[in-house]
Structure formats: C-alpha cells, structure tokens
Length: 78
Image (cartoon, rainbow, N blue to C red; front, side):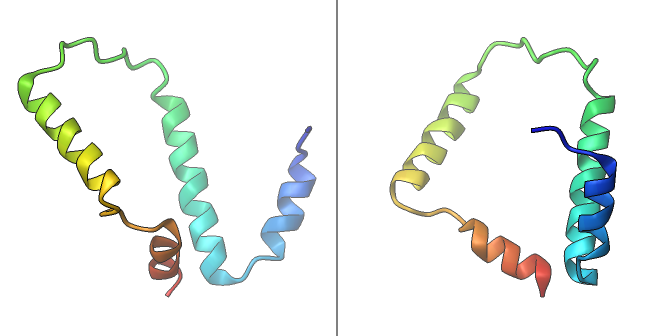
C-alpha cells in the first residue's frame, strides 16, 4: 500500500492533541532508528547471566506477568 505525505498530513490534522503527541513520539523514534541503521549488530556471545535473564522473562511471560499494551496506551494518553 503506497502512503502519500498528503494522507499523513490529513491524518495528523485530524488527531487530538494527546494522540498527536503519541504519533510524534513514534515518528521521532522511527527517524532515530533509521539514523542508527549503520550500527553493527551485537555479535558478543550470550553469557550465563543473559541466559538467566531470558529464562526469567520466559517464565514471567508464561505466568502472565506482563504489562498489557492497552494499559500502557491508557497511561500514556492520560
């Protein structure tokens, strides 16, 4: 799907101020990430500490100990 700058302008002009702040933050992050595309991939080996953290994250996920995206969105908007 081709996206035109005119379409983006139209959509931006119809957002409320709070939503506009979220969109601007996202756009700034995307632009920043594009600037960092020449940063080399981390090729260091995975440590035992890394593996412990990964295992803990998997366990938390399996227990449902995650933050719901809708809760984060609500917090950012209010």
